[in-house]
Length: 107
Image (cartoon, rainbow, N blue to C red; front, side):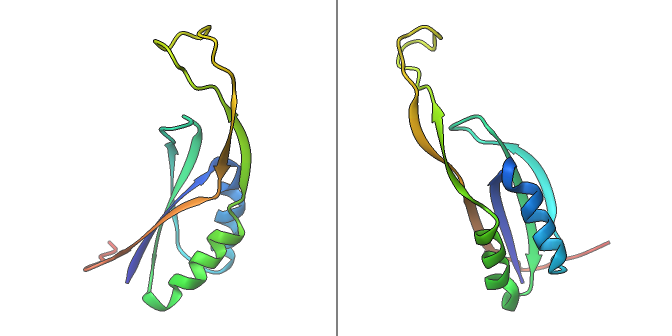
């Protein structure tokens, strides 16, 4: 058995959740916040048998879009008027971890 942890941008959360439910894949959603952009994310916890891992990864890949966004780096002491200009960054997509599960209990 595997535990898949997928962190996706909030904009993709509902679409991904619906796709997983459609394929009868149980999922737990947690609200989370990214440290770099301080933007809202959703962390999905998905427990599946080994033979379903690739199917889940395919669903995540299809439902997590990479986009361009903007952020303003703070060059000084964190003051808003420090002369920093917005820079384009890549946002969205998914960060996925696949972990082996030694034991699983459901009560």
